[in-house]
Image 1 (tube, rainbow over the protein chains, first blue to last red):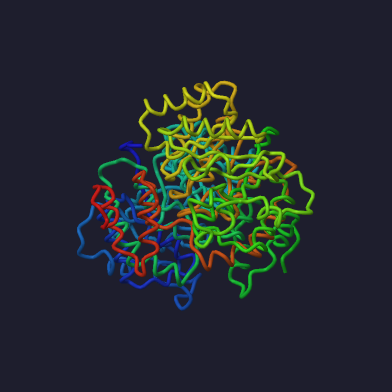
Image 2: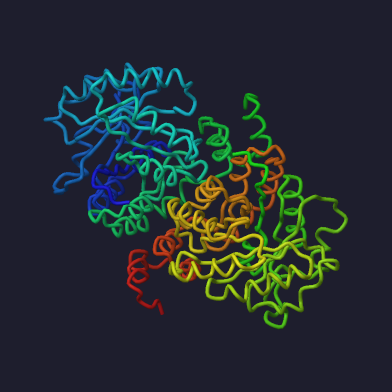
Length: 316
Length: 316
């Protein structure tokens, strides 16, 4: 699938940091940065832009905050065409804590919000656009949103200046049919806007659903090295780059960095396909209950876990 | 996707045995048998039907041979609607070693062959049909077969009595586009026959491609518990049963058996997504070179492995 408009964003540090509270060494982040840059990846999402008054530095690594100093320590002195992105969650960042683009090494701010708070998301996007950034909105957890509410959120977005809207399968619950259905809905509701895809791997469908999104015409594509990400993880970048036949990509630096730092990391912290995440995925639930049982000393009874979650029995 | 015609075959013991030379305890195989039966799976493929004069018992477990005594030890005394299948590879079985159906607990013989030996495959299928079995042909490794040769093989099959033909992605090299293309080709070339799908997971697409095959109209579906199988493994049965909305399936015995015996087994023998298998998949190669490097004490340079395999450099 060679389509020059396709832009790949790697969010290994941002999404992967949800597992280890962004406790990556500078050396780790720099190796990721260099590999992505050499591979021709279009954007690296280096973390969240959050305000330190809401989250203590003592509990969260630098990539929860993405200050200019933090980022410059990694990227300083290296000439690259790759752009840098940070994600901002509604309610976790004071807009005033985002510097004007001219004072930042960041190129893009992606705003994550739920459908019911899309107006807040649009407002933050407009704020970031005014400050000079590229922007997107990532509408999370839409597999749980009633059709009418989703239509309203898309209507609001259609009237906004938000240039890029992401289809996000937060729970890894979607099949190809849903991807095609929602991509068509988003395209029809959002004329003139670009669409993106962010998929999770609870059902081993993150890469497959990303392919289907590309076939449906979506051009902004999220992936992570070796699929690293919360719970079951994300669309693996190495599979995506191999699928995209664009000659601007070179997969070899990706194999190198996976071997040097991702395969060792996976022996220390866990992500990927596991039955608890599969169960939250097939039941279209937030992965938090899956993460809880995966973190337990001993895996609980999986059949019981499935029945409780299916029947809505509280787990505590 | 509820379509009553869909029939699910579990080949955990047969395909999984390729990893450990079928060295499963009787207790393990019986637990698989009971779980599949309780889950409502249509067929269990319990192993290969091979002739002992070609393969020594000293090196291979019982499920390389599937004698009547071996199978009866497992299934004897348990009343089930689930049918039993064994696979026969061309050249590894003497037709005379297959007993008449009336003397066997097996219901089906699936014949695996390459496109260039399809006539031998058809002949063995006809032999098994004459003996009273249900039969299929599994045409392996078609991602490497030239279009003209594949068309000829399908033409031969169309003239045969073979009732079911499997689309097999032996190398885990196919994308959804190829699945739809080949399903359409097979259906057009094989009027009146049923089609099946057998997918491998080198690119994390085994389940996704199985879904696409089902959407394309294919009704005979292969899967394995927890995706167990050679190299990157197969389409995970638990994901498949959850996708199929047929009320005859109960996923809960599958969670139980995965927790009791598959998760522990996976700490001892390795299958699933790994970069060496991913590389053989994206390069459309047999997984043997990937298995070789995975079995090495230390993982070799993955970038070099990729370049050597891509460029056809011999690995020895």
